[in-house]
Length: 304
Image: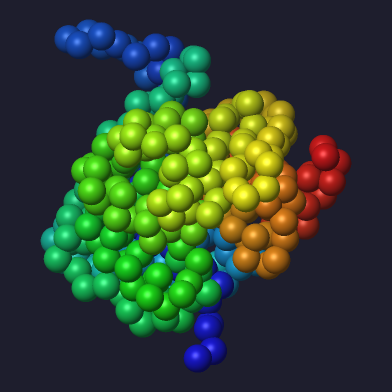
């Protein structure tokens, strides 16, 4: 069967409220908001959009509000030639909405309104979309839906990448283990990877034995680390003035997959991913400053 899409992203599309505060208040106290804007977001949509901008043919499965086709966000996806045929429309519900608060230390607290995404729980596996892709990326979303999709993708012998992100706490130990067993590449920041190791009571070698051949750990300004059969690969971050760290992780994943799916090495894929994410943090919003392939490649060559 001829595959029409390089990468299918499964999980949230969302409207993001990006909020800056000097510090997070204690309970029963308030803090001033120094800046607030609304942007396109959602981890799966970020990966699909950034991947498309880099030249991948991407598709997307998200649960969205019934009026989503009338939004600027949908038009934006169409302009990027993202296959949206498998979006799940939920009449009478709002598209998921994220409230991301960042303080002066660049620490973050997020609140997420699931809205239409509650429909994931009762939705059928998007078999046609999975069969039409070379690889599947499971982002933040419903744990059981992600698990069912991981099973289907593994049966199709696809590359499966998994990034539970800030939804990690929604996975019980068994469900987390079940998805990881179907995973080829596990992505997580340093906090999330440590939480996964603690939850499954394994070390990094034991985690790889469960399923993922490759573990990619992002460490913010400290760069990233890749664990595989090879020695640990350490990649420095490309230092840029960070206006907003939101979406840096998703864009890193899109950048990494865009090169790895095209046959590049782990090291080259990670360097390119670092270059991609360095563009995202320069502006507010996850998709405001998406680089082209040439832009990211040029910055990668300049730095490394």
